Image (tube, rainbow over all chains, first blue to last red; front, top):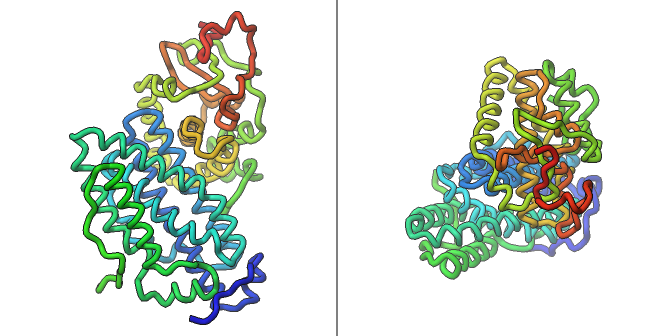
Length: 238
Length: 198
């Protein structure tokens, strides 16, 4: 791979000055977040407000829904500044096909799907494009709170043997559904992202970090087994 | 529909854009963005309940709010939203909720990121605002809860037969900060809940 871009890119004009490939690569990252933050709020968070067992948990779910929607708007603002095409023209990632049908299911989306988002965002916290770097750094406290809420609440739920199997089933299903979130192992896009200093990690490195952290959560903190998964992913055949 | 990414106050012309009830939504959000000082006005009674001011709403208190009242609010919200959709005003509802979220979320930001209690309070207020936005648009009539918000109060809900109200800016107050005293110490025997009228 050719040498990585080492300079900071301060704004949209400087990004355009670097050429189409840089702006296109940034656009793929930013518009993906525009779509997926909105999808997370609409598919996971908002419907779960009514599933919460206590008022406090209901209000926390409400706050997190608003934060996810706020993240969507902040990425949308970045997309707008860069003059990117409408991010809603493509479907959100397949993990958002997961149907949240219980409070346990919702809690696990926060502990697992939001953890995947944290892993990706941590990488972007060193991105060469300063507006994206700053945005991701500013959002990390909220994203980490979401994951912490999911993990802490999951531990409380895990103490109840009646919930154990539901917790395990949700966790395994979500981990398997989230692995493609990181992209293909042989991704040409990822190579371009790294060459331009937008990302540092390969898709497989990010996926492996996600697997490492979810294994700690399941095995060490929740007393669950871990599903047999590959840290490589070559895409679907369809 | 206008595209907004950040707002510190409702945009010019919002009331007209929203149609019937729009002036009520705009007034609610102007009151919220103007950061009114709490304590200027509370009615003696709301919906037949005495009003009781509290200076803090810890999780244990939040969990004691009458679930029947929450269900009543939830049904008001659902009915109002359904009527707006049936009337072909879904885009107006979406605009009102979008603007409300943009105006309210920074206003209700916890002082400390990760403060679960403050985030829960903030979520409760955001949920209530979402309800009031929908009912204001659908009903276009005076509402005692919206009036409290307009005067800087958060109607927390009924606890032990009284409607608790707290300062709207409570989620943003640094935790551990002494509450702002508005009554002499000898009257503060019931803190954090303190009856004003009951």
